[in-house]
Image (cartoon, rainbow, N blue to C red):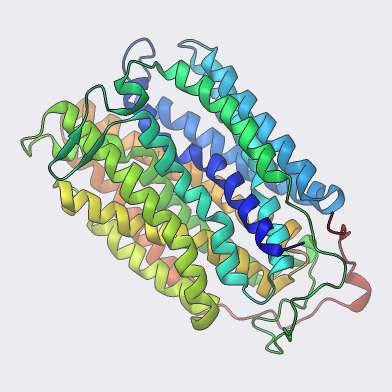
Length: 444
């Protein structure tokens, strides 16, 4: 089959999975009636989804797709994701019902489906690992753009669409109705995209392509997960990805409330500050998040994965440290959201490709989920740190508490850049007897 069909199916799947990044569209409404959730409660739902996503991906999806193939696992993930949003839509104002629906079931659905396009496409495109992993997960970043703008209004410079044209919320849809609609769409669209998600035949390689001989990028070594986690290279990737996740997920989880706080003194109405902050996330962050996944992947195919991660982490660290100050104006908020989103998205192209380079192309479906557990940890630390600083600022009347969310995250990213400076490929190769190939299903 034409391998680009697999790309198309993977992007459609990821567009739906990326709806979790639209969470900031709901945080402000969850603070009002009938919910009355605190900022920390709102972030707990988001964090639970991210943690469940990472754990299910590591413990279930990676091994299951290696045995059953990506199609079955992806369809199951789509159905579980859709069910989670339907459960949330039927939960009324219950914190625990919404936590179960979006936090647990929704996160599990994402975790099941997410790795399948990556695992399949690295095998179909060993000649373009960086670019193709970027394309595979670009939909996840672009997904927030679609789902936020579907619900909220649109503000961009002089254009203010905040009334009846302001998305489903502007037309009177409730949060529960939006979640019900999402559930149905996710189940249907993920299942549709999964139809073309299959592995290539055993021994397949692109016509005219010769595998590289460099040990840094060959992907020839096949480490098992147990062997991989015993290497310092794994922990270097894990820690650096963790720091990048803390920064990016904190901004995703709190940008609407942060933006509203910082823009309150700029002369905008309360309704406009909400939609400006939503545009920062739903347009600038989401758009550049998706672009970053593609462009950083493409850059890394030429510059190298390690150098690309060093550069990305350094730029992200500087941007996070300065975000509190530049986020006090509409265009500063847009600029900061764009750069942070661009760098954050790049992580999802660089780290799976780096995992394949260092520990094996054919094992990436089972190995990368272990690296991705760092994302689950970051999904707790980042959003909750932002939520805690918001609640402290609300209680004290001092919005500068946000500084103590962004600056530590920026310093952590700079530390990640230093860690990657010292990272080199593992010197020890697994013994031949240890290099058991994962089952490879023939293309349907």
